[in-house]
Image (cartoon, rainbow, N blue to C red; front, side, top):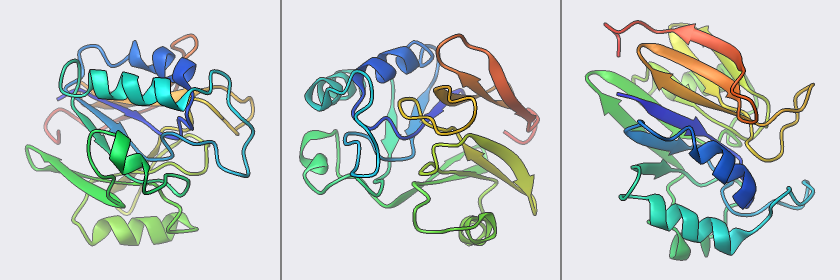
Amino acid sequence: MNIAVLSDSHGSLSAWEKAEKYFTGNDLVLHAGDILYHGSRNPLPEGYDTSGLVSRINEGTGERYNFLAVQGNVDAAVDSLVLPYPLPRYAVYENDGFRIVLYHGDQHETLEERVDFAKRFGARLLVFGHTHHPLLEERAGLILLNPGSISLPKQEPAVPTMAVIEGGEIRIFNIDNGEILHSFFIGKRNY
């Protein structure tokens, strides 16, 4: 199974279009929330176009990719009226015994709290966003993946990032040039 993983698009159609070129060949697109709005603590991202982004997501879902998304802290109830389905606070996805828990991450402050949360579901991988900082590491047998933000990155240097899971490997990369920033081998046997 090949999966594209992103978070914190914050209404940027231009960032989505950059990320979307990496969806090709993926069976699933996971989005860890903060899909449409920039939020009061963030500037407007380049290419901010919420109605354009809604159209793009709705056109792609089911046609070009399967889309599984969760609600972020700036996603509003009205977003569920325009997106393909109501946004849950978390989702669990399993493929061949490899369980992924997806949530935005604003519910917990520390990595330890996130690990405890995911372990309750028997997860092997926790996907979260919220911080706009990419992260890929293993703790207590759980892989933690924050793909960063495709539109409002906050790490130094600030580059827009997302991740892919394919061929038994997780890679976080710069969506502007494809440069791999972090990778983790999970093994084909495990996934």
